[in-house]
Length: 325
Image (tube, rainbow, N blue to C red; front, side, top):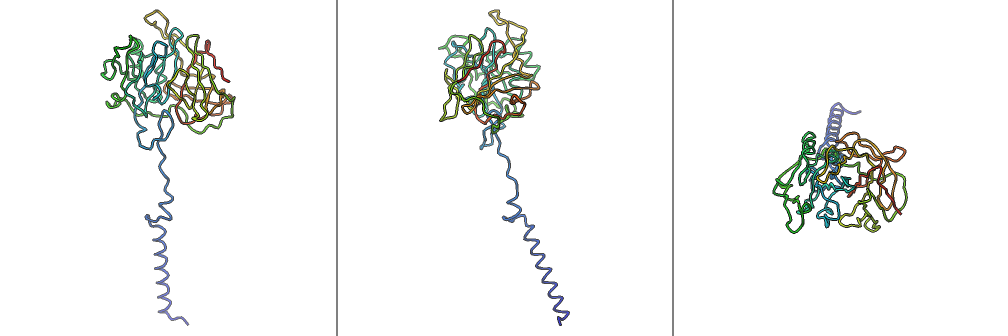
């Protein structure tokens, strides 16, 4: 028979073993349990490209520079360094560029031109600061009412190049502007970035984007780099996004007497997405001025845009044409 003393000693040993076991499994320093199950923090991405930001600077403000896009403005400077470019129609069938910079800060960008009311819906989604040579009073009042900051030639980081004729001689130093701490962090990505799952469209090696009889952008696909290269130079895009938009009357004229159009950026319409040597017909929508562009298939399924540099052409419904082969 087991003595009472033996039974008490056995019970004490069992209690001690259970206590040691519990401490071993609940220890916060255990490498085999608790610490291995802790979720890793998500890696930040740039709002304008969707690319990873290993240096933790993805909350940097966005600067949007208005750049002339006529033949008289070439060669353009700094466009190749932009994270994303929006080409928008202006008066007389011409176009201008709204070049967005967040992950880069080139010292020379231009030639810088004036703002348009169309720019409100382009910059509000990421709370970007507009860099421009100036603007009509009606436009500047619109910007102020929308809480859009405009940096013009009153800032010493915008200077004139005396070797070039006006008005194609204003250039901006984004390195200088960013050192001033201008702007707020973006509140959301500019596009819905991610792996594309939409059905394939048509294979293409070249895309021609005609905004009007005076404005055409031609692109060729570099299979090795997986980029669409601008034939007129200085931009390689991972994604070409071409959206047909409505134009309204901005309510004023330019100095030459041409009525100035306003791009209606809120609403919906048809478009094309070229990425990876493939061109898809898509639909777009934008619920409000401060909302991002949303892309879908023609059946309404959401389309994500692969991370990287993007070029968005806003095309008048009546005069535009997109062809590819």
